[in-house]
Image (cartoon, rainbow, N blue to C red; front, side, top):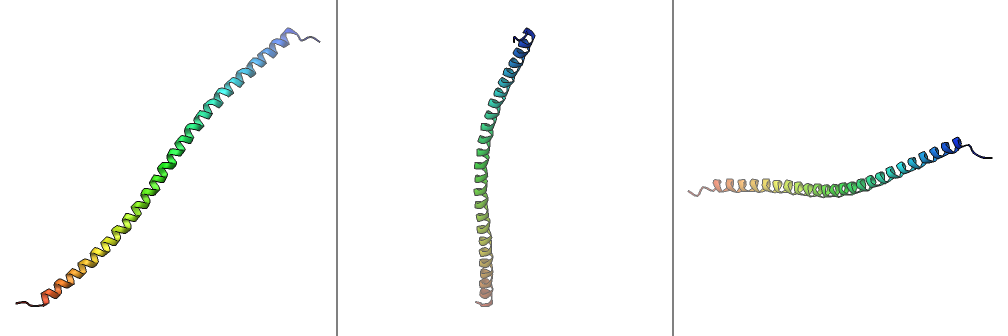
Length: 94
């Protein structure tokens, strides 16, 4: 059986179309792989920034706790000084 020239031409068109489709898919795959690499780098950067943020937040919480303690200590010292001053006033040195 011999194929007609028309059928061979149709087959050539289908093969050419398939090759072009494969070429396009290959190019798209390469582009997507590059995009994946870029997104992985962005993710890594974001994770590092997130860790820095967590560290900063931890340090901020420690500073806030220290500040509250210092304010409490300051208030206690102020009360003690006021008590001492009141005792001195009551001592009539005149």
